[in-house]
Length: 350
Image (tube, rainbow, N blue to C red):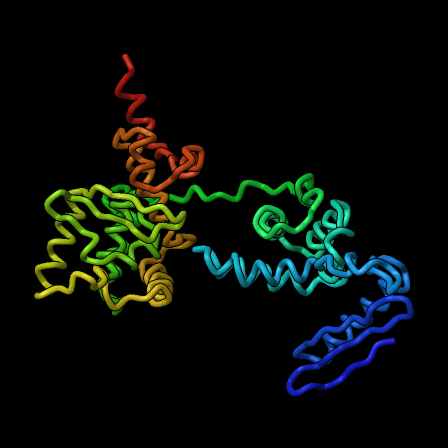
């Protein structure tokens, strides 16, 4: 039988059944508490909620639920990651799926997650999103087994198949034709209408270096060696620092910023006064002013890496600049322009 109580600002639902330990959970909304209680009662009635009975050994009651594992992972593992924001969102969303998350982990098998996968797809979630969600849960089991010492016979997601189409982007900046400016020129021209400081310089810097948005905004003057034309990226996405050689346009840009900045603080940001959110909003306004559709700031990284390949740099050389440790990942960035390929073909015609 389910009981609902109001405790402060929370609603507590409790389900009791003879032969089983009581189940309880707190919610912000009463409707969520009622929904959970009905799901628990249905699971107990149908026998699909494999809970330990009161007569079972104490050890079986100590087996953590999937919810407990996910919550611990959220508290200990996720905050250490660069992509903690999206992962936190996905895991918190996953915790709303009852009775799956309320079950002890030793009762969960591949078929349970296959059913969850199919349910998410029926709800209209993109296959790539389902794959990302379940890849995180797979990682939760791996960390629990390898780092926390929790007894897990087999990761229930290790054999789960999740087919998702390749949604990697191949977007590059369009070049100008018949005297018309290309997309890069249009973006740079439109920066005069945007008040965000250093927006023009940030765009040029992104196309010349291939740095990510967060890497660019975290750069400090102390990371720069103008004599050797080297920039040290300490805050990389994969956790590994790298040294990026600077092109002549980059050098001119940085020297101009240095000369106009007066006495610079070596610990100060090179592109000071610009936050990640400010850049995101400025980019959207800039695209609108330039009349460019379907272009993300990260596409500038794609453009930069593709240009490096077109200049004739080898895969290891490009990887040392881009920071990729797996050369296979570079395949999604190294798209040569159709026009460049035709020029090379025409140059070799006899």
